[in-house]
Amino acid sequence: MVVTESISFSTQGNGEIVDITEQVARKVADSELNDGTVTIFSPSATSSLTTLEYESGAVHDLQALLDRLVPQDIEYRHNLRWRDGNGHSHVRAALFGASLTVPFVNKRLTLGTWQQLVFLDFDVRPHDRELVLQMLGE
Amino acid sequence: MVVTESISFSTQGNGEIVDITEQVARKVADSELNDGTVTIFSPSATSSLTTLEYESGAVHDLQALLDRLVPQDIEYRHNLRWRDGNGHSHVRAALFGASLTVPFVNKRLTLGTWQQLVFLDFDVRPHDRELVLQMLGE
Amino acid sequence: MVVTESISFSTQGNGEIVDITEQVARKVADSELNDGTVTIFSPSATSSLTTLEYESGAVHDLQALLDRLVPQDIEYRHNLRWRDGNGHSHVRAALFGASLTVPFVNKRLTLGTWQQLVFLDFDVRPHDRELVLQMLGE
Image 1 (spheres, rainbow over the protein chains, first blue to last red):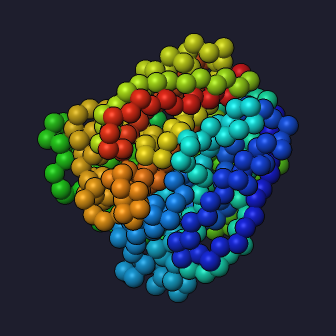
Image 2 (cartoon, rainbow over the protein chains, first blue to last red; image 1 turned 90 degrees about the horizontal axis):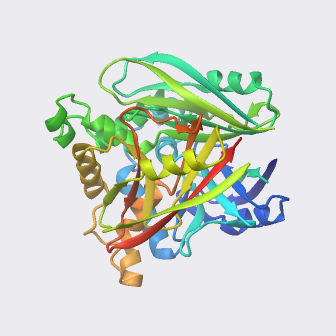
């Protein structure tokens, strides 16, 4: 059986990292499915999904890594062409990926104790974001 | 229901980035399934899949990032052992991953307006590449 | 149909890379399913999954890349807060991701000839690790 849902929230962009665990867990618990996988997909070219221990230290460290590896203030051809200043956002999104698949068992996500589902907004302005949640199971 | 397909194309390697959106979208539309997920998998150790706004600026910027973070011309033990010169290709492929899962609804991929599915060929020579497309749904 | 399994093994951490291909392949072959996808998920915030040619050169090169891009010995706020010394482990895990989805056909994983499934343990101490394997198919 296939169940397609969505979750929505607002972000400030600029590397904001949002903990979406509770929103996803609730959609899984409220579905008719007991066991299966949920694929979370961000229909955007400037944001990503991954897992992280969501505490202020690790959140900061991940943002600092991105500022070091994919800085905002170097030259991007995307910026030269489109003048929207988010060249680094596109490259970061491609590196981290827009898709995340997580198994659930007895309506519960199989996450570790210190592991959260996070959304990373790399764009340079605030957005209302909507993610696709698709559950396959029985 | 499970539907397994494949798509094929040729690349020059050396970081070429190929837009595979149309080929994947057609396989999804032509299947008997209406809703579900498609997993695209690259059965290769020197190539990857991700999403990207496929315009020449962002394509160049992603290639430039890879040349900066995972340069071709540093020492790789893989090259010392095998003399095939693609040590950087293996490391890049492991970093970006060989698998991508995308939901579809009413036979359409749930991609964003500016978001394409791309194949990244990191190897140092041309290849005929074949990707596995597996759709699960109803 | 959904089949949930697990695999277990011990690691030394500190960047150890474990080839889990055989363990996963056996679970797929021993299930009642012929065709479908297996999602492998690491319920941990300090480890990841990807694919790699599992030979000592490429294994070393990937570890060297991580030491270069995400060094252990720079300042991490996570370490300042929690004093557990694994700030780099958390950031590496977020970069590589905790989830991997691979199609199988006729009970066989669709991997390339030189491509293995690998687990990366970024934590700073030995662990007994257990991964979730969930197969969806028919």
